[in-house]
Image (cartoon, rainbow, N blue to C red):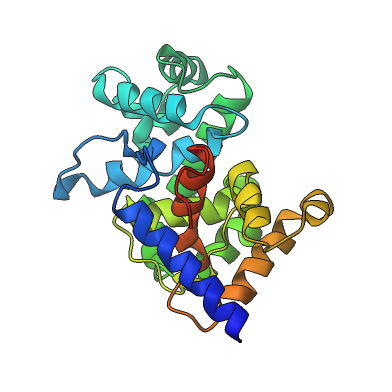
Amino acid sequence: MQENTVFLEICNSLIKAYQTGKLGQTKMPEDSHPAFSVKEKEFRLAYFTFPMALNYQRDSYALWQAALKTFEDIETRYVFNMKDVCVRSEEEVRKSLMKYKLALQPNKHVTTWRTIAKTINNEWGTMENLFTSSNSDFLTLKKLVQKDFKKGFPYLSGPKIFNYWSFILSTYGGVKIKNREYINIAPDTHITQCSIRLKVITETEAKNLSREQISERWRQLLKGSTIDPIDMHSPLWFWSRNGFIFTL
């Protein structure tokens, strides 16, 4: 019990350090976004959804800068409008997505983007309807995206990206996610290094445990506290990325 109390104190210290700028540069990749008005809810939801599906083994900062340039260009902004994506030709969408290198793979990335657009448009009509139908409940949304319509959400339905997407929706997308405490922390390289440093896992476990197992380790340690697992993502990510300049 005492050890867990100390661990929670450390977690709270990292959160506070993140909030007060003591971790160093803490601008998130997703901070590259337009100043959406209240009336641009659909654009806002689409903006923080579609690029997520292309965020695989690439620089997140470059991805979101490309997304911003694509949105700011009146000729390419339509890619964030599902109905427009559905009626335009594949070649036209490909040209628009690649103009600012939002899509890097001319076939796979474009297919992924168009598939998600068609799925949401055909099944729900709008992004807002998708979240309304799921009551903005993480567990219900998880079933829809990862099970019921999994093929219609390529890459976005993957455990790591789905959890992070849910976090981004609640942080930037204006969606009040219910059951937010079930959103798992996503153990990328930075989160894993922090997990070792905080003795959540050993170096051997880092090599042998699955991402889901590492996420579950965090969940158990934070269980019963006021900290949701996903609350630790940004503090840990920047703590590692900035070379652990903040000392506990």
